[in-house]
Structures are given as C-alpha cells and as structure tokens.
Image (tube, rainbow, N blue to C red; front, side):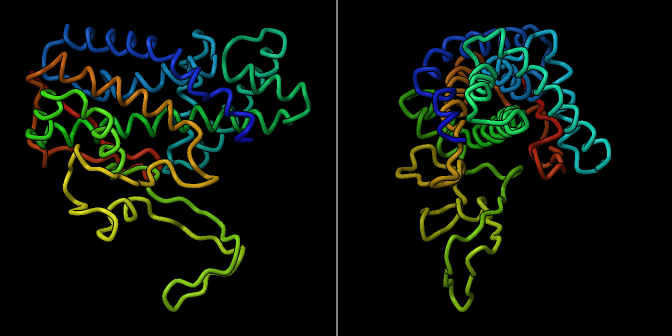
Length: 300
C-alpha cells in the first residue's frame, strides 16, 4: 500500500502543489485581515487550510467537499458511536463512488491513482476506499491540530517568535520543534511486536499489541535536552511525530509543506499578532482523536 501511495505523495508532486498552498494561505490570511480582531485562528486558518489542501490532493470535486467534510468530522466524534459509525460508512461509500468515476475520468490526483491501482488489480475497491478515507481523515484534523499548537507555542514564547521573524532560515527547525511539541490528538498508536522484546523486567511477546505514547517519546530527557522547553533552534530533533520505520507517515512531506507555508507567512503578515485572551482561559478540545483547542482567539 505504501508503494502505491509513494507516487501520490512524491517530492515532485508536493513541490508542484506548494505554490497553490501558498496562494491558499495568502487568501485565508487576507480574509482574516479584513475581519475585526479578535478572530479565531482555527476557524480562519488552521481549520480550512489543511481541509482544502487534502481535498485538492485527493481530487474531491468542489461541489461534494462540504458533504465529505461533514462525514469526516462526525466520524471523528467518539461521544456518539452510532452517528460516528454511520458517518464513516457514508464516507467509505462516497469514496467508492468517486473512485468508480475516476476510473473513467482520471486526473492528476490521489483518487485517480487509487482507481488505476484497482483497475490494475493491485487493490480491491474496498481497500482503495478505506485508504482514501484514511488519507482524508489524517490529512485534515491532524495538520489543523499541529497548526494550532504551533501558533500557541510561538505566541507564548515571544523570544522564539522574534528569532524566527529575524531569521527565516530557522523555519525548518521551527516546524520540527512544533511537530515534537504537539500535545494532543493522535498521541498514541498501537503497533504489534514482530519478535519477543525484553524491556526491563517485561517480555513483550511476538504478536502482542503495544500502545506507544508519542508525546512521552518526544519528551524523553535521554534524547532531548530540556524536553519541556520550546526551542526552534533544536538540532538534532529525532521526534516521532510521523512514526518510524515502515509505519512512517506517507503524508509527512505534505504536512511539512503546509506547516512551512503557514509559519513562514503568519507572522510576516501579522507581525503584532497576540493572544486575545489569557492562555489559561483557552479550552482544550476533549476529542482524543483530533485534539487541539476549541478556539484560538488572536488579535493584532
């Protein structure tokens, strides 16, 4: 499956997509500037940008995007199991219909790549619709969550933010530190041991499920000096935000591209951006799947 998606998320395709992402970010920031401050940075930027980008990459028609977005949001609601299950079933069915259409109406998009793989016999249609739905789900909520936390870290660490404004060459390392310091949403993942593993006085048997806490790993003092400090100059930064090995996130190049665009432009466009309420009044989103904040009011 990873081999099938490697073309869809290749460096060449990501490079071709970057100018469009930059234009989208410019449009969202311009619309934000036209509003009276304070505004909610999540509603204005962190939420819509990843959603629009993943829709474009997948090739979801514009007329159907709101419906797919609604299914994705409802599917991630752990408080209503029945509605979540129905939404995910609708999402899979909707993706299957799109994939069938892409077989006869191909384009430069991920859904067309998956449809071609089905035609070639490399994937079944249920496998392809599940993969497409997973990409929509992962490429939307997770990136929005990271943008929120990144903005919050920079807004509450003025020296780090000023350093980034003075020296744009720090952008790449700033993005890696933002990824390391992400604190909610998708912070655990189950893997299965491929062999017996001894850790301390515990034996993990081959085939056992192991739940790995990535937030804990990304704050391991044996790996990261002063791990609770937000430091955009941190190097090396071997965080596990995208997983590891054969589980390394296939969309990591896309996520990094979006984050570089956002944090390369946000404080350039709004150099006096600040939190509009005290940080202790911010409310966390209790959804353990997507994480993040309920809102992020900012002013300038």
